[in-house]
Amino acid sequence: MFLVSLNQTIILILTSDLKERLLAQARAEGFSNARITKPDSIPEVPDRLGAFLKSGFHGQMKWLESRQGWRGAPKTLWPEVQSVLMLAESYAPKDDPLQNLKDHNIGNISVYARGKDYHDVVKKRLKRLASWLVAEGGGAVKVFVDTAPVAEKPLAQAAGLGWQGKHTNLVSKETGNWMFLGSIFTTLELEPDRAETDHCGNCTRCLDICPTNAFVAPYQMDATRCISYLTIEHKGPVDNKLRAGIGNRIYGCDDCLAVCPWNKFAVEASDIRYAAKDDLATPRLQDLLGLTDKSFREKFSGSPIKRLGRDRFVRNVLYAVGNSLEAKYIPQIEPLLLDHDPTIVEAANWARQKIVLGKN
Image (cartoon, rainbow, N blue to C red; front, side, top):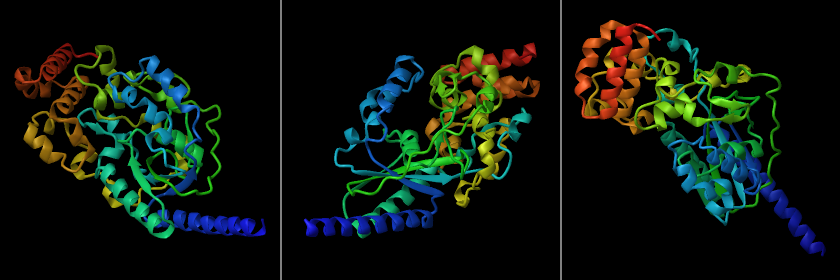
């Protein structure tokens, strides 16, 4: 019995030391924060996800349905996982992210998409850190960034990285809510950290600012009304009733993130690759209307915007042009009335008519 107890103590000391070094290594790799949780720490997710899907709030995101089981339980995704390392990387902007909304001749691009594609940057960091963990502690690992069916935000809250705010995004006392999340699943038994609690209080700034009223209640979003969904995930024409609310947002929306008061603690992005490229910080609508498939791919090489494709992007630009009410765009709109894509043709007709009528 004494020998068993001694061996257990030694194992605890070794794993505790490994965890401490692992978290230090995560920061050395450039992550803003890192915490550990267990794969069974989010039992509430299947019911919450099921209710979201049943309400139809996922819209055209059918992959949420097809991967529902995996997303609801990490062990379903990988039965061997024993611990989950959740990591946050700040991409907080230097300037006011809502400044572009004041100029209707500029297309507003969500902060996270103005620089290098974060999928590539974060995944490389995750792979390096995972390799370090295997070398130092053994076991097997799998790395995930948000293209995988992992409930990253609930896991991040369970690990203590922050809490899911009323806007459903993760918020942290230490870094605000400008965060990319990644995870490393491991077969190693590592001591979990304490889950974070909610600190939103009575604040409703994120709910009140939403231009399309996408929040049906605090902590509940109808994604089919969210501008990020409409400009990125939704294919085909956007509901006419929502187009005015889109304004000049041509890729994503930062409004609910930007007004969170916890951003006073935001850590400015340390990786220069997240800094806005000159032509994406304040892109002029007139420069975007004439994009072809080739020029679109060239312009957005290395950007998450490239995944959108030229047709959907130009559709978004046309909505912004229509909302500008500027007659100077009509000569650029007219060639798009004969575009190969019917959604662009419809958007071009809408934009021209709106400008001619001159009212929102």
